Image 1 (cartoon, rainbow, N blue to C red):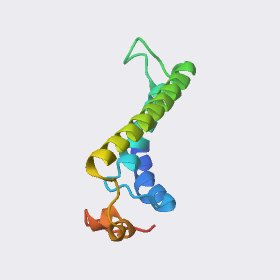
Image 2: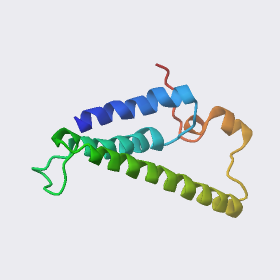
Image 3: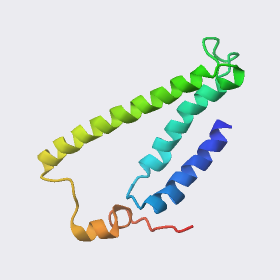
Image 4: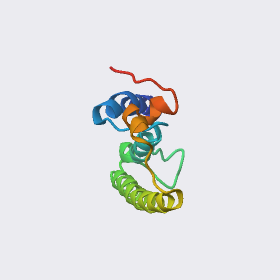
Length: 122
């Protein structure tokens, strides 16, 4: 169930969410790794089976608190990642003289101009 849902989550993240929000993620890091990481962490709280790991059980085995723990971990990771990304963005901007590409490349988008990836409309 976790893997099947991951395929759907990744597809939605790459082909639907990206086009709806119109963000440029040249490697689809958020649509694939970000969203599936979030799903995987939460799914662990739902499906954790005590016969596999005697130390913990998930929602389906009567431990609804585990889902809350997983949500808290996801939120903490999002906050940490946002803070560290901001810090690294400013450090690299100072060291490289800026974090933006030229206007033409920005208008075309990194997917197409740098990686040769063409847009896909659903």
